[in-house]
Amino acid sequence: MFNKLTAMPADPILGLLTKYREDIHPQKVDLGVGVYKDETGHTPILSCVKKAEKFRLDTESTKVYIGPTGSADFNRLMSELAFGIDNPAIIANRVRTLSTPGGTGALRVAADFIKRCNPNTVVWVSDPTWANHTGLFEAAGITVKTYPYYDYDTKSLKFDEMKATLSNVSADDVVLLHACCHNPSGADLTPTQWDEIIALTAHKGFTPLIDMAYQGFGDGVDEDAYGVRKMAASVENMVLCSSCSKNFGLYRERIGACSIIGKDATSADIAFSVLLYVVRCIYSMPPAHGAAIVETILGSDELKQEWLGELKVMRERINGNRAMLVTKLREKGVQRNFDFVAEQKGMFSFLGITPAQVTELQEHYSVYMVDSSRISIAGIGTGNVDYLAESIAKVID
Ligand code: PLP
Ligand code: TYF
Image 1 (cartoon, rainbow, N blue to C red):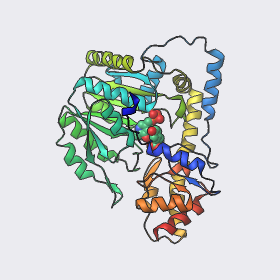
Image 2 (tube, protein in one colour; image 1 turned 135 degrees about the vertical axis):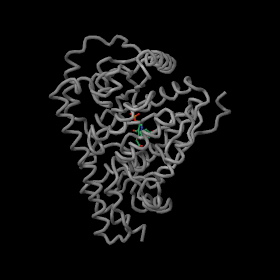
Image 3 (cartoon, helix red, strand yellow; image 1 turned 90 degrees about the vertical axis):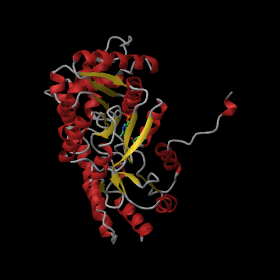
Image 4 (cartoon, rainbow, N blue to C red; image 1 turned 90 degrees about the horizontal axis):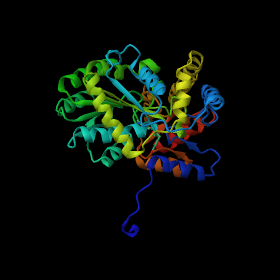
């Protein structure tokens, strides 16, 4: 039966990594996949994670099944981290959270859940959005449409067009918003713009689904959750998909969380029972190790402080890289204005060069980025920024 199949293209982002690894150029630069890297190009295990793992290794006494919700402590702590402990939705007991295999697992569970809420629902995603969003929702049988978001010419948000499109979204539909550090553009809503989108959401009655894969990578853990927290306090129903891959550096452990907010505790319980059913039908129960690490960190004042410190180092390095690249491009005589790179947030920005220039950078200079010219800012360092800026200068002149 397999001979009826035609080959699927590889993930365009992850595929770059293979090409990069095979490249023998001594000055090759990897700006492809969105993983944090330190100055040496290494993706380290956080020290707080190592300590939490050691503690779990010494104290863990069973590997017995944990059930489809995963760890209750992890779920509570993640919910408090995202929504804030004093969020009215938490106080009113309207939030339900379960552990998932990464942020992607959270999104897939959310997709199947949404399909069960309303089989005809449309999920609206930003244009552009993370490449996997569309496939994930379509795999659940959901129609995906886009709302205007990033203006490639002005390098800023198409905020008025975004609002105009969202004003016509049906109350039966779902609108996916990035909590912070928009992937792929790095262009985020300001708090004032969030206020407007939240008011519009409450007024129109569609359901917000917020994807928070980078809490703490933009301005800080609390600052980055501004929209999530205010949305949760302002609407009847909401879905949140969080990832611990980036901010805890737990990529391969596959840990994240999916939270739903009901209009009251009873309706939250009913909705949660459907979410649990969805989980049972996909993977039955989430992996436990990543959750155990995160709950150990968030449940200890000392480890939590250490984590916040390590997260700050990662955030500041990324922001420093943004400023450094802009300065270097200017130093290398580039006339074009790249100041927007320093102003945007999180792991990514579009350089705004053509696909042909992206190809030239890869083929002639071994500088790797996604075809859209999205660069992963963490791949920049003091050791490669001169070469990178010179290479960019050569292809755009
Ligand atoms: N959502 C966005 C916007 C992402 O960039 C990512 C990628 O890392 C994810 C979700 C999924 O993260 P995870 O690796 O936890 O599945
Ligand atoms: O956009 C990125 O680079 C990250 C990492 O299938 C990623 O979100 C990319 C592709 C993928 C899973 C994770």
